[in-house]
Image (cartoon, rainbow, N blue to C red; front, side, top):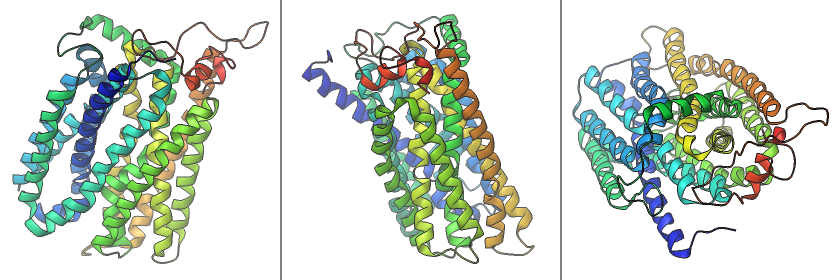
Length: 462
């Protein structure tokens, strides 16, 4: 039974909606390079490897900052980090709008990556503090879904504006949208119910460091990290940078058709999110199986596309983007592990650790694809041939194999920790794993089953 009153629910919804808008803006800023990659190669006179550096700089900063940001989040709260992150992304887009030098352009993407790193996990902390635990799986998926609308804004309106008005006006408009979002966060977002800006008690840094170590020591946190790793990278890299060149240069599609497929991928993510959330809530003992199914589906459809003689038919490319759309919701299951295996006071640190996984994999793949494309593109060719893209995207199978092995490894470790062997057989440990706001009763059905309070041993929760 929830203790949240109707006015508090309305207030919580407003806070969450504005925070999600900030995440939508972050996804828009993050995706703005992927759909303008071809134009960027001409503006800065660079090749595929150099273009990859733009995305890698952004992703490296994002991944490297996840654990520090998680520590800062537990110490200073979501509101401050959303404001700081939004401001940094606006600054990055302003620099990118006027950049003609590669070094300034890379610095701009670093600023975008730094601000982006502060956004998503800040929104997840707001969900944990403002809503009952039983609603968390759905709201986390909804957060990811709504955020993906930012990719649609980047794939269609930004591309249209870029072609109509030019590079600088397009990215100035992007910066203006980001500045508007920062103002909304300043007015509406609070860290927790009945807590004003700056009113929360800030824990000592030594305490936060101990909680970070405790989050890392929890096998469930590392299961979340590898879940995020194995499920996210293929779709993320496709949407972030290499999907558009693959569709236009490799598959011969018109730019508008390629942008439409990227938008369809986003729509697929929006549809898949609630389905994955429902399955996680109904079957919390089988979340890792769902992750492995999503991974296997991505690997299988890529195998068909890469082996297809000549250019793939349009229907197959539609199937590809729809299957890749499952990767985002599948990766979000990693955050569900962070929430259910850690208490709420270290949710920022645990979520930051999980969020490293997919972006480290994405960094590796972005770089690898760029290098392989340059190595396999004939000298003097104006664009990589389809064969070069095939070799480049085949690198994914190494990452899938590594991620799947690690998911199985830490699933077993989490089960052993949750259900230690005794003479009486597996039993539930007394540790409370349900993450709910302070004062909120732990009454969420999926969390209770996963946490071992009822319905079976904790050891099966993975």
